[in-house]
Image 1 (tube, rainbow, N blue to C red):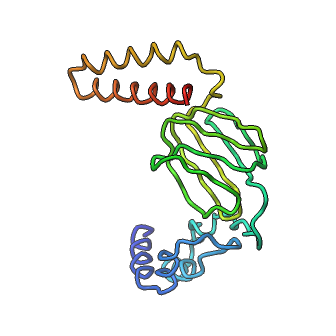
Image 2: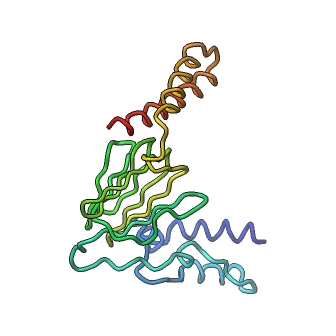
Length: 203
């Protein structure tokens, strides 16, 4: 019964103008809302069952966008095992996006950027804190909040240059002797990461 109900709801939602508009804009509501079109359609095909929750009903209210550009950028920087920076107001962050170094200032347009191995720098007045990140994503919101999620990160001043040089030499040798696609891919990743580490130390 539920399978047929879901199919009928899907067909009705496909022709519902409000549903089309919601999918087209894909905007987060300013306030938490319930998908009334879905609920009404559900009641018609399964009146004895409570309508399940839909994604729109589970979304958090959209953070308000300030009328004027704030003077500071609020940054959250988290790793899988800890929070490195939480709700810290800074002047700017520069992230190693796959499209190139991306500076984020207060009032930056909302965007999502994939991170590549490189240096994440946090600028607070004359102080600059640098981290080497392996990969991840940066989520920049319209209300001057930046959420940065990395798989792994370490302060640049804690990196041992000798170990970086050794790792780069080892992976370069492995790349030269690799005989399978898997071995070549693994060695190339090692070369890329250690090259980025080396650039972080020398740059």
